[in-house]
Image (cartoon, rainbow, N blue to C red; front, side):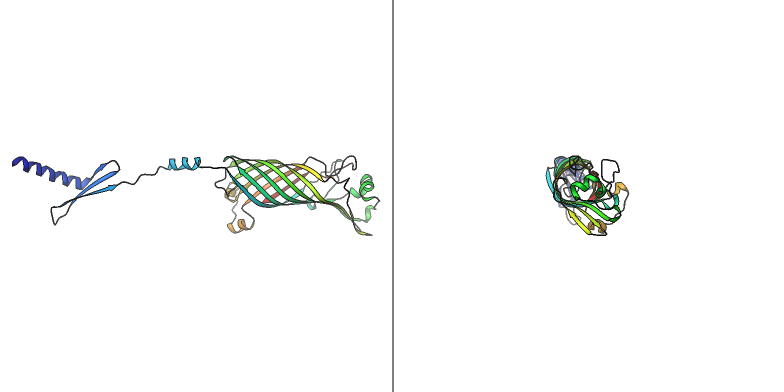
Length: 285
């Protein structure tokens, strides 16, 4: 009888101790409580939630990157840089412009690298100063001579369909598929001029248009370089742009430089000079 009482006392003391601290076994924790109104002892079992590991989530996010394709409409405005050397006709830089509009397609291969292509309409407007007074240009294109004092305006314009390909290197990789990050594009572009015309405006005869398929090349090729960024990367330039302004002017921008390495004019067989080859501008996507 004494042994039985001893075992009972030890059990009661153990129950009181467990009620204060609980017992944990693996992911389970046992709680023992005793009601004051009766002598019934209740045992509760609770499973501990699994703790999340931030490093594991981050590793999973990095490993979950998948290749994908993205197409975006873009438009842009560029300015043709004057070159007053003997190889080019003189132009007015501020009024010699380029306009582009089309689609850019990107194939994301890794977070740091992508391949892409462009298909666009391109318009070039070269405001010339000395073409009409150059003897070879007068002979091949105009067919007659104009007095220098009679000339008010002369321009060469071309409407082009263009296609290009580029490789993209990311300085800041895109955070998601709809983001462009911060990148550099290097590529090439080919243009077909489906309409090309030289216009001259004089005081005596007003406007005259000249189309010359021999002197004006229909096909040209250019090298392209772009540095672009999306809205999320504006902070690297310390520029505070509101969301409303950003929505109106598209989510991404790029500054581009285009260098035409073929002749726009059939030189030197038809014409001794060419048009300046460098265009600098900005794209909105």
